[in-house]
Structures are given as C-alpha cells and as structure tokens.
Image (cartoon, rainbow, N blue to C red; front, side, top):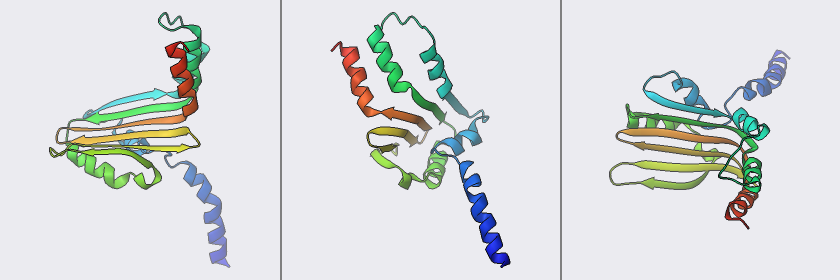
Amino acid sequence: MKYLLALLICLYLAPASAQKLPQDAISTYFSEYVDNQDFTVVYISGKIFELVKDSNLDLEDLDEKEVEAVLRVVRDVQGIRVLHTDQNAMAHWKEAKKRIPTNKYELLFKVRTKDGDNVEAFIQDENAVVSELFLIFGAADNFGMFSFIGSIDLTKLSDLQRAIEGN
C-alpha cells in the first residue's frame, strides 16, 4: 500500500516538475553560460515583438502592407537566444552534442568539413508551423548555438514575400 501511495505522489508531482524542464535545446546552455565572460550572449525576448507590434513605428523603407506582413510573421515569437565562444570551442561542441536530445528534432542539414568545422540545423514543426529552429556550430576556434522559439506559420512567410515584392 505504501508503494502505491508513493507511486501516486510521484505521478502527481511529475507534471509539475516536467514544466520546469527547458522546452528548447539551448535553454540549459543559456542558463549555464549567460554569466560566463568567455561567451557572447544574445537574448531577444518575445516581448520586444509585442512592443513593436503595439507601437506606431515609422518604418520609412516599408509600406503599410509590408509592415503588417512582418508583424503577422513575428507575432508569436517567444524568443531568440544566441551563445558564442572562441574558448575551448571543440570541447563545448562535444559537450553540446552529448547533452542535446537531437532525436526530438528533425535534421535540416549537416555540414562537416575536412578541417573539422561542423554545422547542424534542426527544426521542430507541425503542419507548416515552426516551433523551434536550432543551429549549432563548432570548429577548432569557434562554437555557437542559435535558437529561435515561437510559432511561425510558414504560409505567412509567403504572404510576407508577396508584400515585399509588391504583388
């Protein structure tokens, strides 16, 4: 009976602890290295896109249809994160490759050169809506990660292209 009670408590607490786990590939790394002076860190919150949407910016180079199309594309962006370092680059590359569950992503492309440079891009999407685009690169003197989190409806990208082309 006590084992059943323990199991029920674990099942009750599991969803709460699962919500605290990072949902994207770069979250763990970002939190570990955000204060490390060896890394260049960029974080763009989804809030900035809300502010742009709600502001009355005068974007001289874009007409009203183009601005509206851009805002429809970025409306559901939750964040952009970038980590980069030239310190111990290959060690960071190898660590990242071990820790990131790339089996949860679809590989878009992979490049490996004879000089040892590596680039891999992954995506999570469903029904032409991208939820994460993730890029990792590593070389002897360069390591970096880029993660775009949010929802971009790929059909809206074609609307954006038509608006920019003036059709």
